[in-house]
Image: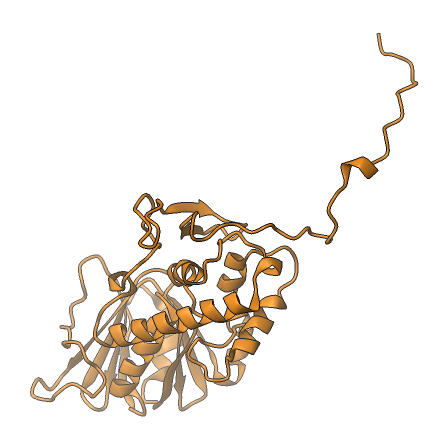
Amino acid sequence: MEGPEVDALSFRLSALAGRQWVDRIDVPAHRWQANVLLKHCSGKRINQIYSQGRWLLWNFSHGVSWAIYPLKRWHWSAQWTDAGKPPAQGWMENISPLSTAVGRRPLLRITLENGGCLILSGRPLLVVLSTEKLYRHPSLAGLGPKLSDEFLTDEIWEKRLRLLTGDKTISQAIMDESVVAGISNQTKCEMLFAGAIHPAARMGSIESRQMREILSAARRRGELLYRASLEGHSARELPRLVYDRAGEPCRRCATSIVAERCGRDGLWSWFCPHCQKLPQQPMLFGVEPVAAAMPEPEPFSGTALK
């Protein structure tokens, strides 16, 4: 799940549950630890539901927060206990029944004072901690801004990327959550194609113009994904120029799309080898080795082994 999708989900959940009091929280009986951590939020007000990157954050009136991450697939469903009451504004999909989809384990059921009911199923990571210490959590403390944040200008984007030290590739830099939070591997591949940048290119070989182009492409895709998510669609339904199209022709030059592991990020990158040519990479120490200047090795003068 990508950052814009979680952003859209937080908007829809806020429209239904924001500023509402929680009547009851139900957790499966075998999840004893979740029962202890979550049930004390019953009778409290949900102050805010928002997102940061892929994290969905809930703040409650008694100073406790939930941080939920889609470690694996999750599913949110909603229903009104009063069948005659219309869905809240902003929840634009049909309200699902209380029974969860086949294969998804119900994790959490939240009943609200306004008659709404939310069910979270699947296997997400759910962390409960005090709101005061929310951003001291290791997974949240180093998160960068979202693509939709207004202060993320072209200059700040480039500066944050170039601050990464070492011999990082552009693929590794983009996927670093400390630069910008919530960019997926799919978005990475599509934005690099828009900027005609090879995914294994090192940061030192990328021009400022290309930096601006890939940020602009990422923002356009993020806006499309946000609007699609509000209507119940996923990232898989958006047009893809390179991602997951290995062996298919490039829509610019008809060259076959290839997939490789670029750098040490462990993620596959899809790209066009013709449109995204690998530039001459800068040397790690900025010095080209010159064979002619290398000293000749001295002849071995020791005793031969018999």
